[in-house]
Image (cartoon, rainbow, N blue to C red; front, side, top):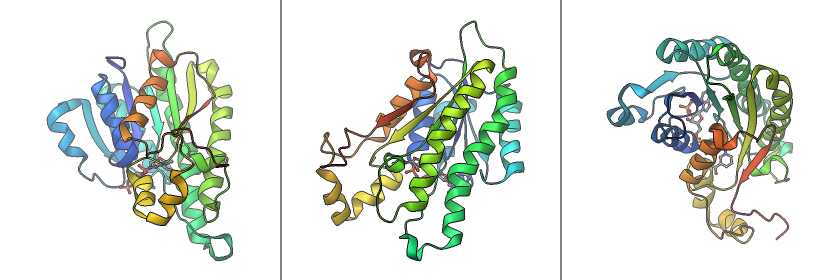
Length: 252
Ligand SMILES: NC(=O)c1ccc[n+]([C@@H]2O[C@H](COP(=O)([O-])OP(=O)(O)OC[C@H]3O[C@@H](n4cnc5c(N)ncnc54)[C@H](OP(=O)(O)O)[C@@H]3O)[C@@H](O)[C@H]2O)c1
């Protein structure tokens, strides 16, 4: 139980990779607030984990909604130890045809959402009475395209590259408050956005040869990395981008 007694907020924690992270944290003993605009079927997990799981509606692009999320976590569990900024959207489109609306939605969700949630969590994370040597943790979720150019991914990859830089700045600013900040960069995972890609045979064929693992990642492999980063096992990892991508070789 590497997260016994810890309190985690996971944005986009209802489905896809966020749900895998929620499940991994619950299995390691944490109490989890899974937050997104829709509950999806997250409430099914409540049967297994009872009052260690709370669904809280949030739109990470709205300041007040984000504040309500952090307030709900504090009201339910007494504080926040771990924040996973996982909520994200992908609006593919080549620049020549990319709409301003799609650009703005992508940046507002993937980047401004990370900023708003981070800012709102700092107070409750700092105030939390933790055991000697234990820190608060923020994990931002970027993507393998944050540092690799892919046609049609301009808005998405720009937002994720910015998240990686925001991670480094956050780590510097929040270290004096006892908060570590890292970034988890998934490759193509057999869930959520990655599953959509794999369903497109042509796109999947183009990527398969680039993966040293030769397969899509499993959502629980992302969950395991998120447990490592948030637990004391990752206590000396700070301001880093941890890639979980099966050895993605873009040059192949
Ligand atoms: N799956 C992959 O292969 C892969 C690879 C690299 C990076 N990633 C990253 O991993 C993260 C999760 O992706 P996924 O594949 O699991 O996607 P997904 O299945 O589409 O799930 C996205 C989650 O984010 C929530 N969300 C979206 N907009 C939101 C908003 N404005 N406010 C609050 N919640 C919002 C969604 O719930 P609602 O729609 O109900 O709000 C959902 O829970 C994303 O940041 C993505 O960029 C995924």
